[in-house]
Image 1 (cartoon, one colour):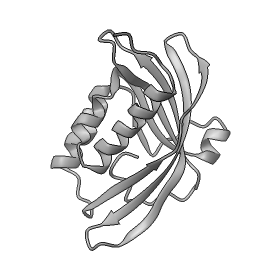
Image 2 (tube, rainbow, N blue to C red; image 1 turned 135 degrees about the vertical axis):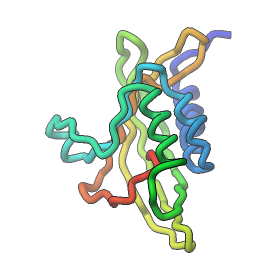
Image 3 (cartoon, rainbow, N blue to C red; image 1 turned 90 degrees about the vertical axis):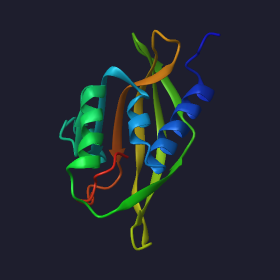
Image 4 (cartoon, rainbow, N blue to C red; image 1 turned 30 degrees about the vertical axis):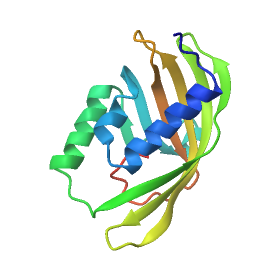
Length: 158
């Protein structure tokens, strides 16, 4: 069966990404990216000005795996989890490798004590590709947060 880069595929991939993060299955989340990928979290202001400053930056799946390993074994942060609300993806232009898409998101953060708050809103700017195994993956995800105020507790990927 041939995989297509269409709205249904993008929607399923976004849902899978959100589920992996929300259920603390970060090791599975990294597998949704290509080996040579880009993952960045930035602000709308930085993005609009073409600045590449990032709150989180990884340019390979190996770097994403290292980040997850650090979260599991080395980093000290208050226990928390996320709940994503992900909008419908808009498929944009084709790229030499695949297709670009843009998807709005809202992330709610739930702290260990039960406090729940709106944590982040923004959009995912993705490059979707089909790998050699006929699997739709993220070659690039730039997370553009609407606010320039990002909590320093940004430990878990958005």
